[in-house]
Image 1: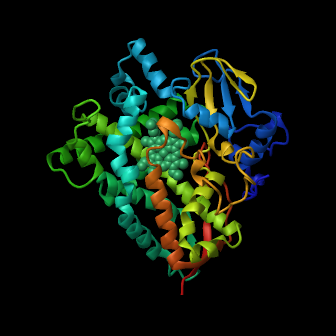
Image 2 (image 1 turned 30 degrees about the vertical axis):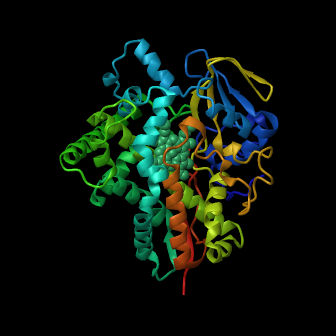
Image 3 (image 1 turned 180 degrees about the vertical axis):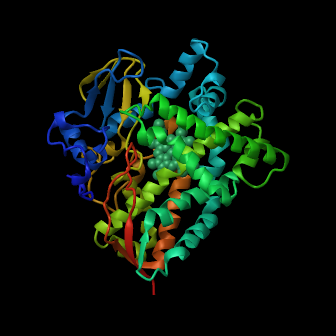
Length: 442
Ligand code: HEM
């Protein structure tokens, strides 16, 4: 059983006791996810959700075992991403992509820049890796400066307390991403609004497919029209007068895989991915790390005295408290069998990264935070295989740098009074607020 912060009384759902009680997606499910994973692992590691497939008449299946999810994400042909299949379907039906009003920047970009596995890889290697992938190391000083700037704002608070999310975990990834893209920090508020609109399906969407109602989708499209206009203006500006930032670079380079420059709309699509992927995810990683440091005795001191352990700490934290708990993004291209359960061709797979990350068949004492765990990066928090998260290197850099700055400047943290530990709705694991008491380093 997990030792996550107990807050069961805040949930409209009861804590599950047997399989029939398990519900990962209704409001309040967040408060019981880890209890549900124990039940699923024991009784239904491949759990059918009747009628919840991608196409009418098909089912969804929740996968919770590490070996199954790894097998899925590493084999594109047998388990294609839903986005590519969706685009193929639309093209077959001759639906002009420009007419899609919902999040249309992304499908358009997928169809022109990375319609298949080879181009998906090229997209990552050529367009995003230099900035948020393996090339992210170049941002270290910038991340450190922002982290210290944020700490400056509260380190001398007389009560020795800080609301850690609003004052650190949320603004840091926003400032970093904005600077990488080449957007001025004065526009952060707008960026946050657009980021919130982008993640709406993952926060307010219904069921495992994160479906928005028509009204919600309309509201989202309205907010995001402002985003598209904003990025297009920046693209025009930077095409004419390139600076040292990601958007400028995208206006100048030749995409070798297709031997041509990118269009303005394609750049909007790439930027969309950076904003939707790069803000809340890292915010929740930082916030859950702070909680683990409050809960696991002695870890803060260990890290403070041996900084070589910080990376292992962030990996273990992301394993134990995966920010993105699960996504329904793969289909079965043929009949399959997982853990002896038949899953027919055309089923939609909900990959529950967070459950795979505490699967006792994969991890020794899975709920322990072990700073000496072997191959600790084999967790599936960022997925794996050809569609692995392209921003994983940047997020890791942000987390390690942030904790090194925090460890330099404080001698200890604990929970302050006034925490409710209420998780935000949706598919991400993260509390809405986190009040911490800290001791300033002497
Ligand atoms: C702790 C932080 C993060 C977590 C937990 C996370 C997790 C994930 C996961 C699970 C996926 C789905 C992969 C799949 O379906 O196989 C993904 C995709 C993605 N992530 Fe991240 N991510 C994080 C940070 C970032 C950052 C910092 C960026 C941008 C700078 C980013 C950009 C993206 C994009 C654009 C995709 C879609 C990739 C595609 O469609 O090919 N992520 N991420």
